[in-house]
Image (cartoon, rainbow, N blue to C red; front, side, top):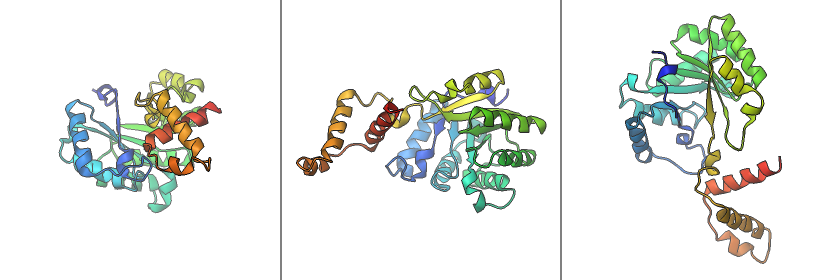
Length: 254
């Protein structure tokens, strides 16, 4: 059975575990371990992270949890982020791969990604060298457009390898991978498509309704009204509601 045949339908993203401020809250081991345990209990055993998430913090926390499980019981996915290449020795892709594997406490990484297309296709060519040295079960690219995905696939094919996965932002509000033909290309070429931000960081979770958005809209407007500014400043709103509101405002203008 191949890795593709053994993947759960849902991957668990550990970006927020990096505590880099992106999601507002600080997460500690005591908060996160029950999430890991429950996920594994439900056979949701595909964990996605990256060194850039908290500069190793996400991988460190996840690695601590992975060490409590048998290696055959989980699938680990992490990434090479081009913007961090200068921190690592050449081959930078191999160096970051080995660094992540060490932090995570594994010998090899199941799914390894080029995090974004900055510097493509040079990093894909270096990833070929990494794949020859290490047992990467699936190679993926993330945040790539259709032309960049095709280019990466051709580079890998020439080396006798295969592009196995694409990971892009995709949701009911962001359907660019559908409109651009990426989903169709992936289907035609037996490439798994991974969606991230499917709930738009809370905007599509069902947690918020139009009443709450109207309240937040009034709060924002009052912040610019001298008569109501002092009262508005006392109001506390969750950071994910703020992000959801801002996202809605941005998308409504597109």
